Every structure is written in C-alpha cells, then in structure tokens.
Image 1 (cartoon, rainbow, N blue to C red):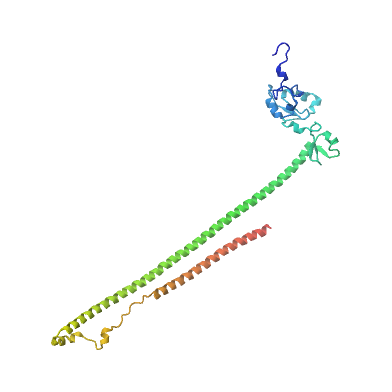
Image 2 (cartoon, rainbow, N blue to C red):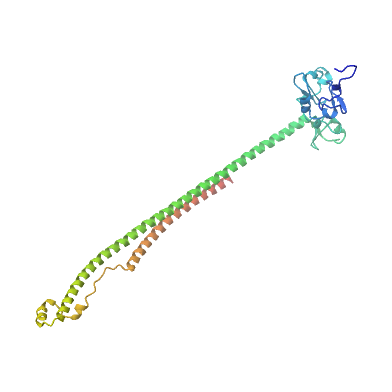
Length: 326
C-alpha cells in the first residue's frame, strides 16, 4: 500500500497489456482497460486477467464484453440487462460489430448477402430485405446440408467409379499375366516337342550310321582277306617267274588256279558298300522336319483359337455390361 495519500501504481495499469492506460474505458462490472485491449482478442484477455474468483465466463453480445461468474450478477437481476443475449466466451467481438455504426450485427441482408445492424437498414441497405441472423443461419445451414448430402452422393459415385477402374485394371493385369503364362507354356511345350523330335532324329541318324559302319566293316574285313590271298598268290607267281627250274614251274602250275580270263583276275567285281550318303540323311531330316511343322501348325492353331475365343468372350462381356449400363 502507498502512504501519504498517494494512489497505488496498479490503478493506472491495464490488466491486459500491463501498461499505463491508453484511451481507458470501464466495463459495467467495474474493470478498467485500454479501449484497444477490450475490443481485441477476448480469449487472450481472460487468459491474461488475474481473476481470483473461479467460475464460468459469459460474453454479452449487447455490452460487447465478457464477464466472470462473479460480475455476471447484474445481467441476472436487472430487468433491462436480462434482455441482453449471453453466449459462451467469444474471441472475435470486433467482427460482430458494425464498423460504421458501432452496433451489433443482428440482421442478414439477403440482396447483398452480408451481415448488418439495424441502423444499416436506414443507411446503405434502405429497402433491402433483411432477416434475423438466426433465420439466415437456418436457411444457410439447410442449403449447406443439402449441398453436403449431394457432395456425399457424388463422393460415393466417384469412389465407386475409382474402385471399378482399379478392379478393371487389376482384372486386366491378371488376364494379361494369364495370357503371358499361356503363351510361355505353349512355346515351352513347342521347345520340348522340338527337342524330343531332335533327339529322335539324331537317334535315327546315329542308328543308321552304326548299321552302315557295321556292314562296311564286315565288307572291309572280307576284302582284306581276299586281298591277302591275292597277294600271296601273286608273290608265289613272282617267285616261280624268278626260278630257272623248268620242272618246278610246271609242277606248281596246277596249284596256281589261274582264271580263264586275265581280266577277271586283275579287275575284280566291285563290292557294294551300304548306302550312307548325305542324301539318305537329308531325306530323314526332311521327313522329320515336315512332321514337326505339321505338329507345330496343329498345336499353334489350337492355341490361337483358344486364345482369341477367350479374348472375344472378355470383349463381349464388357460390351454387354456397357449396354446394360446405358
């Protein structure tokens, strides 16, 4: 406490900004504030106010002030103040006041679609149709409700369309994967079939070659025997030709077994070898290839028929769905 009649310094300070009053104003509850502070953010005001009495806070839309429970008593007792509209604490009181007439905005001008005070009806909005804010709020809320319902319907429709498109993409992807798998399986079958035919053809050629070699080896052995016999006879003849013993030549003459015709001795009939020429193998290969081509053509035609039949069913089903939708 100050002494000597000096007023306490706290009486000259605004409890909001905690500074000396600037353009001070008093509220009906007896508090003093700067005019700028009292018309500013009321939530921040009451957070900064050191209100000792705990209780609920209300805002008077007529007084444009907020009161704690202790200072609200006049609005509950005085008949003229009981007519004031009390609400929950409002932070933007300045937005609820007409900037031109400094009065509460209590009407809604329908032609201009703005909130006005009663004095505005005699000034800038003369002749305009105005309704109370509560009525305008109900009408706008009903419009918003209708618009919200319509938007929900649109959202559901678009959401369903998105789902249908995604499902269609997934189905198309699965069908494509299935087609690719079918094609891979078909060509794998063809490759296996070709390898099988290849093995068969190689086996046939190897068997033919083996038979030809076996027969040829037998012929060669026979020819080598005859050749050795012929060489022995020739050697014996050459020895007799070298001798001067007339009796020896004549005595061995019967054992020489000379053929009647000399050409038969020196030009023996050619021995026929098995025919293992490349023409034989080429014929085998050609027949095998023709067989494989026929098999491949048959399998490929069956595959294409099945594939295009599946594609047609899918397209026709989509076409029917489109027609039913329209």
